[in-house]
Length: 110
Image (cartoon, rainbow, N blue to C red):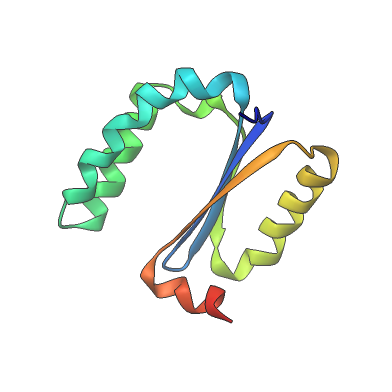
C-alpha cells in the first residue's frame, strides 16, 4: 500500500473551482469531522447545504487541518493550476482527487 505525504482535493462546482491540500498525518483526525457532510447532500436548496457545511467547518475547527486552501471563480482557473503545479513541483509524493459536477463534465471529455 502506498503512503502519500499529501492529499490534494480539487473540486469543480458550477462556476467555482477550488482545492485543498491535507498532510497525510492529518487525514485520520479530519475524516470523522467531515463525515457529517454526506448527510447534507439530500438538502433541496443549495444555500441551505452551503450554510450547513460552513457551520460544521466552524464548529469543528476543520480549517486548521488544511495545509493549503483556495476557492475561486472559474475565471481564475490558471491561478489555481499555477498554485497546484508549484506545490507538485516541490512535493512529488501526492495523491490527487478531482470532483466534477455535471455542468463541468464537457471540460474533461475533450
